[in-house]
Length: 75
Image 1 (tube, one colour):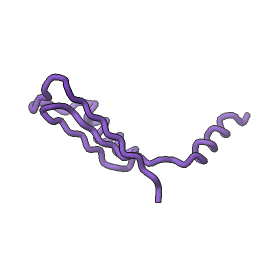
Image 2 (image 1 turned 45 degrees about the vertical axis):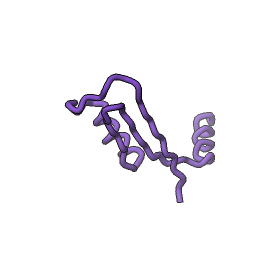
Image 3 (image 1 turned 90 degrees about the vertical axis):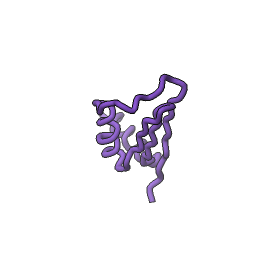
């Protein structure tokens, strides 16, 4: 089984989040492209007290990074 990291982003203390908001590029980017690349749904919430986003990302083994590093340094 592949390891996963759960990343939680929470913004609080700013101006109230408007209930009447449109979809923009950033929202599409996070909910569609990022979720597709991570192969896991993104939980993006716009609560009156602030925004929160939870991502689950696969964790690559150290070997995957080592192989990439070696391929970049070999002429």
